[in-house]
Image 1 (cartoon, one colour):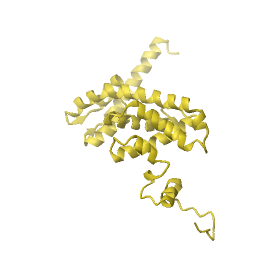
Image 2 (cartoon, rainbow, N blue to C red):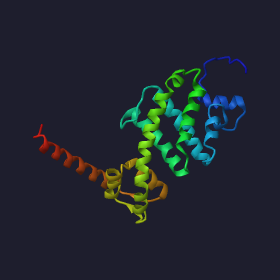
Image 3 (cartoon, rainbow, N blue to C red):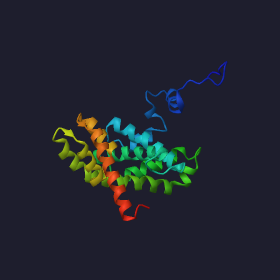
Image 4 (cartoon, rainbow, N blue to C red):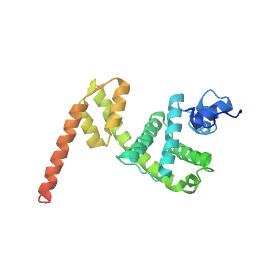
Length: 212
């Protein structure tokens, strides 16, 4: 390496790209921070392996930073990351033990600069596994119903809402699957169904508790 005449230049390459250049790799997925993860899920196609490795690493760091899965802000990002991994695992028939190996491997890779990832590994494992298993149940219940719906050629707002309300099938997942299949999804109608449901729930609650 040659010392720069003007130090501190921002190349924008990031840590992984720096490792890639220094190691002479053609992809950041071949570097020491990604290749162990890619190897664990070698049964899946290349694209899915990259998504799993990237998303699990991010999820481990978020949980290590005390973020929990939720429907808002960083918690929502974490939930989407875990659920994307869960969906790929479901589709590729990847067993749950693989998820545990991925989390532990991320912890091992970064334990030196981030020791909390190792000391807090039990909690990190539990948070990610709990979200994964909860979502896996929703997938198992909802996928077969989704297949029946898409056989009609489109997904109405009522169909999407029924998947959400009756099977715990997130709207985001319905949207992703519809896009992958090239199936039309009536999101405006879904929003209307959802709003009507909220209004009915509000009225019912007011009647039950006397408007208080």
